[in-house]
Length: 216
Length: 216
Image (tube, chains in turn orange, red):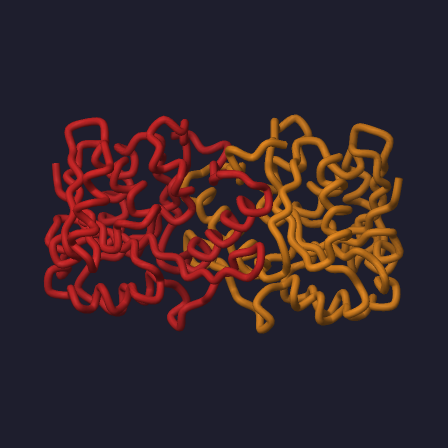
């Protein structure tokens, strides 16, 4: 089973993906600018299954077979650009959303290239960028007993990379992979995260997207 | 019970909303540029319940108590601008999506003001514009026996108009209202329609959005 690094993985969203990847058998490296913090956060996660979660500097996470970008949106490009050599030739999964809080709502921000996935793809020309994991509620992801049964909407221009990420997602407990299409859909998928979070703030809920009527 | 007009209501999306509104007891006027066509389409819809569906020119539909805009995106502003007097002071519901087909996908187009709801609100300054009904699969909407159980994501800046539309949606069979927030979310909600339709094309499905974990 391959290893997965998560850049900026110590936040709630990164932790949730880490624990479910490890529970599916992957060896996960939580990356952070602060390796000590990453090691501490990783030690507190207790996956079920054959996989593991360890902590490292982002440089260590970037050496894994597949790398997920989970940094805040405004540091994503700088982070991946500094790691370009380690990332060359790899599948890079963007779960980054550009969002801003305005009162009770989160609102989407549109980066100059339309989406964070496109920003990352431009910074990493020799990688296969795939978008996934945008709409998931972090609290339900971290708790393996939360009963989560969510659809993960996947996009990217490289068909085999998309398929590979879909297989990874399908192996994770509580998640189903739904390939939506190409990078043309990136802005719409990322921006919808603002809608999901705003609904959860307003309705004091931890809801998530299910596509009714899709057979898995 | 109030009357509801649907501008450009003879397309599949407008028909689906019409039959479910009429089944909830509303008297619906399907509007079209071609009143004869609207009358013909309306005659073929057989709602269940106390309501009715009739056809008229868009001018007739615009005289209803509440008016829904269901025209193609590129004629929405021209259509509502011509009807400004009839629409003044009313709740105007935009279900318009600006989309373009590219191969197997639909991709979102971003209108100059960010969303079609914002375009319509700018054209109709003395109305209360609310967005709703964007993500629904037309075929499942028209067939009252389709088993549809969909969430309708609602947005707008006028709180009482939003609540009023939510009550209307809740009364329609197979639909649940979820208020997301203000017009700041319009572009994200409209653009996500491209994702829903692209998924359905790719997966040969008629899926629709459910927000798991929201209590209705």
